[in-house]
Image (cartoon, rainbow, N blue to C red):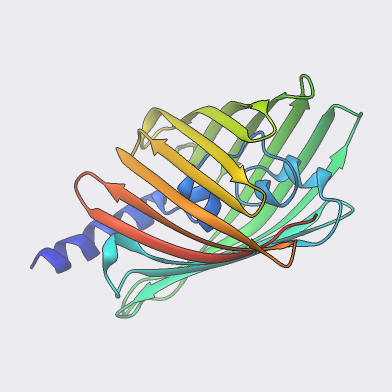
Length: 256
């Protein structure tokens, strides 16, 4: 019965527009990334991919709440020239949710970048015809200084006003080893909430990540290990106070 209730809760959340997907590193950082640059921004802000210097990619598998039935898979890539694509899929027992987005970004000045996202969200309820909705979004990033960056995003996941969401945040690097992120997000269905993340790189090949998402009362954390300079193998776990633990694993191709 508990497993069924979790499935119903998660499916209801998806149908209400709260279904979110990202990569293993972003989830470990509490879903932050509005001010992140390059491949690290592909799931958070289209503006950030304007700084991609070489092809970057992220593939992730998540077992939501530790249940085999609730498996999410995602794949995203960004390329020099400000182009990007992201895809995700979740499904069980006749229900499926699929997201496909294309991204484009440009650097307007040395400090300012603007990006847009356009895609489709396909939901297929059990024994019903598939439903399609248009997804649009816009992001902006500004380099305040070498260590401080700011970003903001507007998203629209449905044709009504309830589908709109807004977010703004900053990322600060007090040193080359530490990156701190703090963001405010607003959506009509969830209200105003905060997201916070910190990454720490104790050695060249290891990065530690911690995060907090107050909307879901969710704590997260993870570790990544660099292989062959540009590749990283990463694992993470997110803990929801009511629904339990969600383990994640993924592979990241960094642009440098």
